[in-house]
Image (cartoon, rainbow, N blue to C red; front, side, top):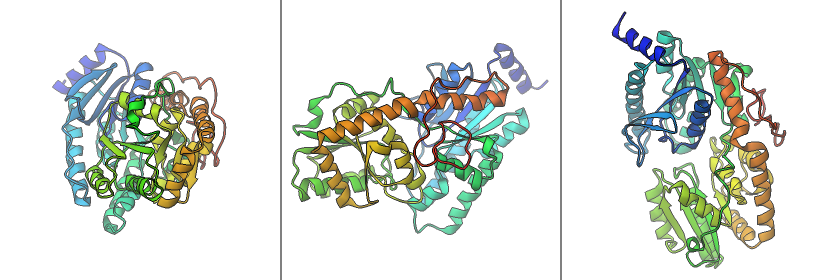
Length: 439
């Protein structure tokens, strides 16, 4: 018996709980809300969960949080260029492989889940399958080829073809795919060649017991009557530059000194966006505090009058579900958004939609909603009800857990007590196997 086999046997004797390895590269855990919800769902179902991710603010190299083991490597982001991403992903793969193989000494993994972006962890999943028989779940967060097109519209075609190759290999390696919406699930079937029954829609539904409107904090309005909020990533494809341009129209073009903006979040565009805000003379009207704690975010969203989803129309955003949309809805905030396919599926009548990428229409919609408290209350109520009755994580978690239970041969999990209603463009019940439809 080798030393590794001895370690495997010892770990197996220590407990019979199925072991799951979750790999995520683009955000630390527990900051990544989707991965944290998934981790806790599996923990509650009796799985032994280990997460490998980059470090974040206040996180260390090794910790156990709420029964979930998190091991992390130092984050490395050399810049926002295409070559910079290649360097970052090569580093992340090697760092992840080192930690994953180290954690394997505690016992084989029954299931490995890799979250994208990027689509680079399939070789590690294949090796663990050959070595230990580990099954592979691809948690489909983003469309990397479309992400490349959106960030680098004039990028090299060879790089785009390379991303399509990596995506295809990830799909082929996966035993199961969990997609964040129906559009992504369609791509898993059409572009990835997956069987319908091997693809499950699992939305990143917010937890309505934790994300709910509280008492407003008037000081956050900074002396103004109204507050408009944004929370999310600040990258080239996220449209925060359009939100700042719309604020310029609201403040300087329409003379609305009574409206303040709080744009929360971090990303590789934040410094440029700060400079753009100051160039437009908006420092007194547009607060940009960076990444904030959950407590601060809840205070801002409990005080705000509406939430901003300024994601522009591009190949990625049109078919992507924005977590911030559903978080605004959980806080009973009406949403102002560009008219994108999946945004409509998520928000339905809780949002005011305008012509994609039109700053003037976006600014006008902000002012119209600020001046119409009855419309805001109606839309906020509709959004909250949709979260509670259809989108909340409990409706997603049963389907997510079912994927793992099927792979390890566990007893099937029961369905949620209330099945989400069929709404939107060919929307199916959350978590149902996809049949070429929206969810």
